[in-house]
Image (cartoon, rainbow, N blue to C red):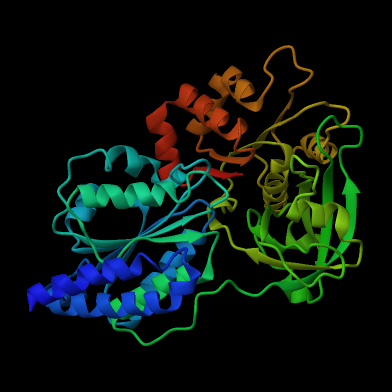
Length: 466
């Protein structure tokens, strides 16, 4: 019977590898994969599956998330397992140790990739410390849901690295890694089906993204007339249903752009940091117009900054991004960003000011002081009113000293160490190219690698970069 299970498992692996990326075979491959996997697991590992239901540690479900989507999927995965009567140990990767892996027989990982193939911030310590250790994982059966975007060269890089490392350390795949391109519904349904079968749970509704709501473009205002950079706009949107004026600072607006006015066909969604709070009565975005090398407008920015007109319908939904929410207490906060990164930082400041939390230090960079003032007048008013304790504006094309925000941080090393010593959290929002890695390097130079990673693990170093 065991030999039969091994043969079936081998065939199942061949079938399941056809599911992602080959739409013509997806339907039957997914069904075959789920069927073979369930039979093989039930026959080959009945004792270990029973242990997974009864073991005090339960099945380990681990999430490594940058924007909150991986966390959301991990919570749904845990819910499916619990629906099948299984005990679940749900963990953020920042809190996962080698001892945790040694004490569990089953583990499911939901791992996103950020930047150019990087691990999420809350997984860097695990990557450096645990994934470089000589831990023996022959006792562990696992599966990986890898989240990524094929627009980036290193698609799902961290999820792939994690899967490879687990295999190298002796762990047995429960089923093949599932790679998800930009929230692809088919891949998510495949993972959902596998977990449902393994849990012995009843069929659940598909994990599809919630439908867009209908919003209207109320205002579009150019923020940087005369700039040497691309045009940057303040965009105001209002929902047809006022009940949708609900979000927290740090959340993400997903836009369904169209090819033009009167076109029903949506393009893939685009994401923008929300720049306002519900009390404003509007959802604000800060959008820089993008163009391809041939001069064509970017899908999302073109729709919001040029094609859609005031009063037009905008398809939008707000996605929760708990990893970038403002702290609930009055601790000091250091906010760092450049360019359109001012959007999320502005919303965080609005939230802090409304709560009476005034220990805010903002370091913000753009090109020219006179023309690239992306809500800078508002920032200076907050500083004058005492809502911002310290405001460092860095103009890269005018400075004779530090040109970028990371340079300003290095120059303020003593103040930075003091601020962190007083319990401050760090929020970084803006460009992935240059600014974000530069800021990370500056923080590590001033504070040291260990302290930076400890801050990330404790939720005191958070990034929303793109």
